[in-house]
Image (cartoon, rainbow, N blue to C red; front, side):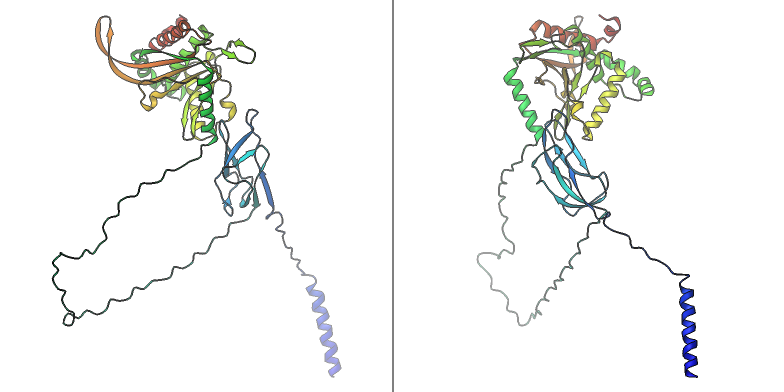
Length: 397
């Protein structure tokens, strides 16, 4: 009987084993090898005229980054190059110290793809319990004896301020390059400046009358800068020497039959000069749109080296900061620069009468090795004429 039950139990187990094999489930374990892959990110390729730059880190080791999030900026002589993260992950290692020089293709940092930065646990602050003050017994506490020198002070006298120590800040590459180029201009060019003043009455009335229609059609505001850019291009085509340059290597004068005007733009890192190309074929709307695009790129630190190469003439508008008068410095290898200033109402003589007019001083600094005084004065007077009466452009006078 006992043997029979053992046999029956064996038979039931065999049936269950066979049935369970029908519903057998296989489990797969995913690999984390790709998710935790460590990659090395290198310096992007620079433009032809740039060979190196200084790295400035935006992230530290252990920081989580998203894909395309900026990890560092490389400050070159002319602009800053942003280095984004190629994928989401955690910064594993910084291979270059902050502020060090890097070249194109050099390893910058290591990134662990897909990882998440560990959050540091905050240590609980120890509670500090102040000891209770001893009980005060007025009956047993002796009263202090009167003092002949007055009450005892309960607070410390104020400490005289200590003069702060001088703070030394390393110049970034852009500022160093600006300083170098300005000094080169002083050492190379025979700079001379001529001045004039522009009556802004007509151009102001023109802007006031057509600014709404101009904005509606071109979706951009009409400013004064386009008038000076167009007037400069007109004058440069009439005075080729101002648009030319001396090649010190070949001892030749290079005259250009095109006008590419650099417009000085102030940024937190220094002065940059993006170029408006082919101004001789542009109208006011084209110029305003290009200035707006370049200014937006400058504010976002997105200017490339190509945006600033190859200008033939520069315009610097110190008037936006309230400047009344000044002498600009030539932007090498160019031969001249126009300085605009603020618009201020001043009394001027008009046909024998004194009138109050909105006036602007303008200055032209030029390389006297190439440009004679006659050409410089004639050039600046042509700009004055065109800005004061834009109809001159239509009549080609």
